[in-house]
Image (tube, rainbow, N blue to C red; front, top):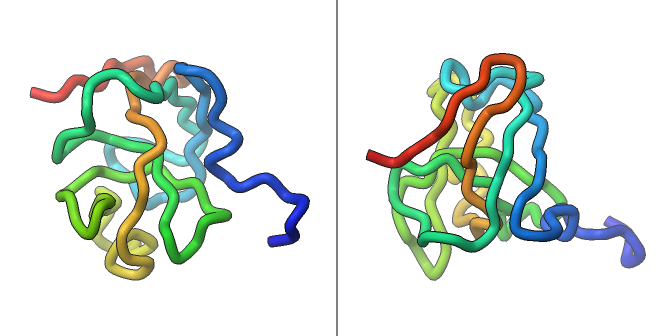
Length: 114
């Protein structure tokens, strides 16, 4: 990453932002091409929430994963697809930047923690 390039997390501005899912790591919950509404701030993240995060080992990569547990001042996150390991199993602890509120395209759905 060049010094003049913005970090991935800098692309999330304001309390609400739109994020596009790429790749199969969150299948079957989310699919490649799903459009999400995410919220910065609000209630604290809880285990089981879908989140947008940045791995400390890969700050240029913005990811959508499921929060598993607090670890080392950040979060251990995993994808829902066990066959894809581009999550904390590979990159370690992540810092959560936003929480997924809804999928608005192509199959609208609200994500609420039980």
